[in-house]
Image (cartoon, rainbow, N blue to C red; front, side):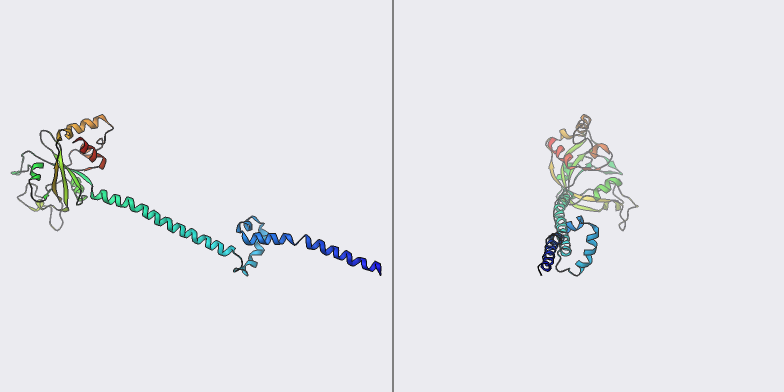
Length: 267
């Protein structure tokens, strides 16, 4: 009877060895795989592939699938917020562009000394503009590049009044664009010195704007054509590339903001 009792003790010893060794490993492995999806990627592919179908029956319990979806959602929300902030940032330069468009700068030439064109005196100085009680149409422009410059003008733009074809050409004052581009009525008038029979009312060729006097320079001798050319010759000045000096035959030219401020500082 005593030797028969020995085998059950040996059987108990075997059960203890099996209970201690395999149980802790699968528990820790399952815990890591359930909590962290990265561990699933780090694990061997043979172990992850068979577990995938098992997790199909556990979509509610396993947090891996919903976590990936929830992680994607905040990412999308983050992108949405970024686009809003980008739009808010973009609104600033857009407004600045709009403001600069409303306050674009130009230079417009007129002849202050008497000169007959087809029997009509085309003299017009800054003093003549200052004497006008109503806005003056800047008509008679018959150059397509100058016309396009006027078509780009908007109400509120500022322009230098430039005396040309005289003893001392130069910038003499400032006027404002008070009405935007419109068909040039002088092109339809046979009695006007700049009449153009090819320009029709239904399809006008030439356009003009209306201007109003704003100020006259106290020191126009500082911003004459010769002075501006001297400054350009020195190099490194804001007027080095001003359109007035690069395209001298244009009667309507563009003025950049830094060129405008520089000339104002001189005058």
